[in-house]
Length: 342
Image 1 (cartoon, one colour):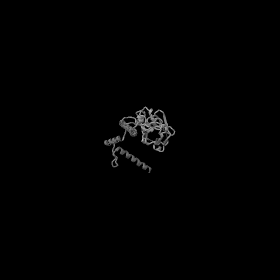
Image 2 (image 1 turned 90 degrees about the vertical axis):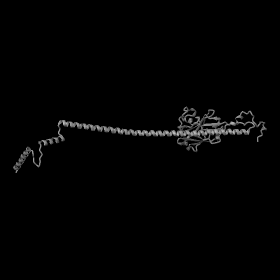
Image 3 (image 1 turned 120 degrees about the horizontal axis):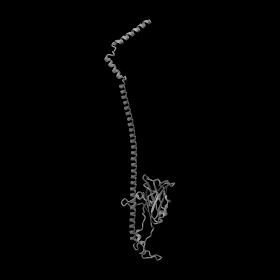
Image 4 (image 1 turned 45 degrees about the vertical axis):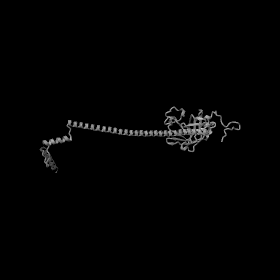
């Protein structure tokens, strides 16, 4: 039990004076969250990934601005609370993702880069546990330089480079809140009540910080899902365009084949028409020049038979007297010739 009416050996009162300027802020000293503070980063959808957050001008498309409160449209960032001068006691688990899943960080060089509350450039690449780097997980232990100045960082992000430093990626910005290591006295003669009020304030502050963290994670998942849907939409559209191109190419080939076939058919029809014209011309020439043909022979023979100009041999008798007489003369000549020979 503290004796409020006594003094210390050097004569100083154990009760702070009522006009102590720090006392009114006693209930509102910032506190750090006594819980694990993970950081999750999505490396896709970075239009200008090589620029720091404060240097970007494409506020509507740059990925750090995409993670927003869906109700108030306020930009939100993941938050890490570190007590001033105590950064070496923190172990922050970081997870790096793309639309294809965790990023293999086995052969990369990673460092922290940012500006603290005093606008000083801060860089840290000393303490990263890479035991689970192939699963996209790193454990970051901030060095002492991180927590030198109290206040919120202006910018804070990780820079990921390959071994030869030819490919660089910058994560989304996150918030680092360096809590001042202040000392404040409770109100005089109100130790227990002040501690109770301070505990209530701390609980409320922890609740607010937890809400912000959950809000970020929910909106982060929304961004990841939205980006995945957009990528799927792009892939589907590319597949449709590819199918349309192949279909058009096939249709063009069919049309070309039909066109060639039609041209060949037209040429054949033209040849047939030309042959028909030639046949008609030959018929006209035959008729006009009285040329003997099979049809005219038949017609002439039939006319001669009908008119009696030609008689047909019936039963080995020659009905034409002139022809018969000539044949008889020929037979007599043959007979005389045979007799003379004998």
